[in-house]
Amino acid sequence: MAYVIDTFFALFAFVLIIFMVPGFAMLEAGLVRTKNVTAVLTMNTMIYSIASMAFLLLGYKVAFGGFGSDSMSGWAAFLFQMAFVGKVVNIMSGGISERAKVVPMVFFTIVMSAIIYPLVVNFTWGTNLLKGTFLDISAMHDLAGSTVIHSTGGWALLAAILVIGNRRGRYVNGKVKAIPASNIPLVALGAFILWIGWFGFNGGSVGAISSKENADAVALTVMNTNTAGLAGAIIVGIINYFQYKKLDITMILNGALGGLVAITAGADVFNIYSPIIIGAIAGALVVIFVPIFDKLKIDDPVGALSVHLINGIWGTLAVAIFGNASFMAQLKGVVVVAVFAFVTSYILIFIINKIMPIAASDEEQLEGLDTVECGMESYPEFTRTI
Image (cartoon, rainbow, N blue to C red):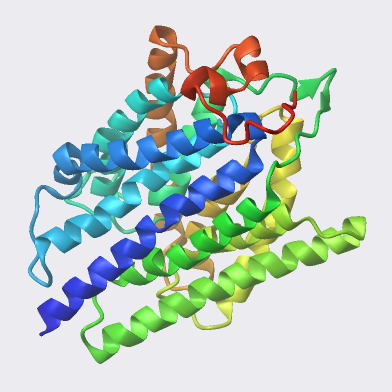
């Protein structure tokens, strides 16, 4: 009976995590201009399909050595892990939207999903090729991937931005040109879908629910996950109001997502109050780092670097501050993954970009990637913006 219950639990968590695919798609579609919405949706669809297939054919074996589980169906264990892989590339694709072409990103997705991300998993949750070396980071506590997933995607995004550059007209004469979101309801819908999916993301990572102890651990994990999201949204709303006497819903939602990213590393080990502090700090970090990246002329349309990279780091270190993990073990894990993910992603993106330019030209960006890449527009009746 335990085998059956835990199999069902893994499948249910898998479905919740896959529900995050439309969450990312709607969030990104709402944050970009109308002339790029179809391209964003196409990118998200291809990422889910190709990343999952690459993980099935090679990535899972690289990470875990092969299929199999004693506590549940091996197929359920695989599907749960497969649900994570596309999220790494989703983090990156959102941050380079409105100028990244679909086909070159397909090639990046294949290598990231079959080799780079699975190796990060191998070093932390998997068979551990680094075991016995000074680079062994298996002691890092990262329940569902503040570092393994979110920071990995964030480092890949930073590498991509450095290689392909910014959107046309984003920075003019040293000043930041605001490019407003096209559809706020879609942004809110996407963010709340992601929030719901996070309960499977973190709760499912406990790994079992068939005993009283495991059931309590899952419930605590889900509650702490939700609490951090609430705290992130609330603190950003407070900061917004005191700064501008206005409430920016896109920043508030990113504050919630930042809190969810930060709690992902240790939602299973905190008491019910620590997530309030962790989530609040995460929301504040989003408010702080969004303008910092703009000052550095690092163009991130969806705020993914602030949400996923910065708070992936913060959340991993928070396990040592508010839990019982070793700070040095957590820091070592952050650094090793950072170097590996950034360097490998940068090299791969640089090579792909030389063979097949990833960034659309200024003329193509002006036209809009919907027409250039997909041959159809999401809102053909609308007046096109520049």
